[in-house]
Length: 128
Image 1: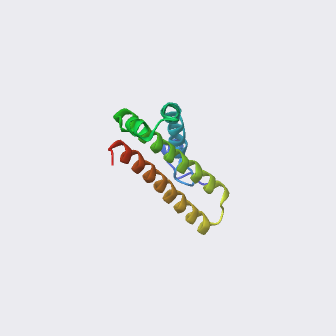
Image 2: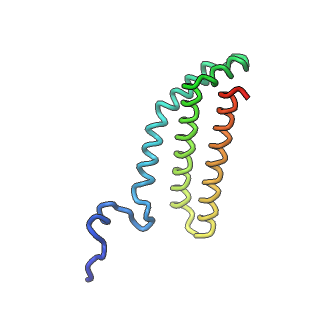
Image 3: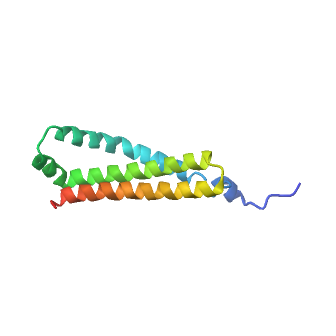
């Protein structure tokens, strides 16, 4: 039996065959944890504007704290969504071609959702 060429540090880091190791795990947990207060803030903001006229909703979203909370909610949610879907694709799609295509589409979709959401929030926040 031959000795391993890995250093003890590499074994401890636990990068594994995908070379991603615990990176996705921690990002997924961090975005989930950040999502708790951000989702509560999002729900409070949305529920406080239900039934209000457009001018009131626009004024609410134009407040800097509200706009920042909404942007953070979108960012956290989109990153969490992309990582979660990436893990599912990597686990269940075994052929390399479709896997690469789906991973690319997943990233493009997350970017499109994030940009569209951020654009809408910023447009309302800056009064365009």
